Amino acid sequence: MIAMTVPTWLSWVDSLAWPWMLWALPLPILMRWWPSRPGEGAALRVPYAADQLQSLGAASGGAGPRLGRALLWLAWACLCVAAARPQQLGEAVTPPQQGRQMMLAVDVSGSMSEADMMLGNQVVERLTAAKAVLADFLDRRVGDRVGLLIFGERAYTLTPLTADLTSVRDQLRDSVVGLAGRETAIGDAIALAVKRLREQPEGQRVLILLTDGVSNAGVLEPLRAAELAQAEGVRVYTVAFGGDGGISLFGVQIAPGEDPVDEATLNKIAELTGGRSFRARNTDELAGIYAELERLEPVKSAGPAVRPRIERYAPPLALALLLAGLAWLLPRRWT
Image (cartoon, rainbow, N blue to C red):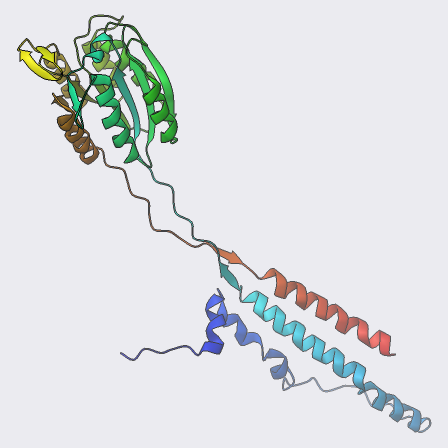
């Protein structure tokens, strides 16, 4: 198959939406060969003033009428170009991403001050380690609308659902242990997140709940709150975070103990709402969990950028009207 290349001087034709309208350009020439209707009356014979009539005929073919015809031709050409709808490509526009509506619920109860986590080469508190991992998680959620709530004895919203992830990151950084009380109210945290998510598009409501203990405060039981989340279509991913409850010294466990996290309840919450439950005993495991959450709740990539077509028929149309007006006025000026 032979590919045909368009000459460079004809490249402007590609900007016309209806280039076939240019076929109307020679219509005025074709009208000259249109058969005229024969006159029915006899010609008027004027034997006198023949010289004056001849001079008037010569004057009618002067510079004024020729210029008027030229203007009419140009006006017709501009009108045909306007009818062909010239268009211009605008700036590229990228469609907005349609991400998740995600609430982060972070436990700031007294137990989150336990210094049994390693961050780099330093021993840090659980909340400090969680902040570092969550900040990295937020960096990869561009396109999502994320909200942040903290809970202890009560649950509080620090940031409503927003696409401004910098604000969420700042609020997370400023949260401290004990800000919402020393106890843990998991049920109230789930209920508050459901309240924030219930008006969002169905199928995009996600709650990630991070806690290191057992629910021992609040008004609503965790499983009852999970039923509310199920009814509102909110998927809850629970992350049990912290050591095994032993005694540690400078990050090194010297006495084992019972795991303080109520994993059974967290598993039921996740199973009931269609989410998943995770257990992280150190920072690396927590980072791996959030990497898995990215796979389970991926950010939808934006569609291809498009360049809108802008109609540019107005200038040739305005020029056609201007030239036609000048052609109409010229005979009166030359007479």
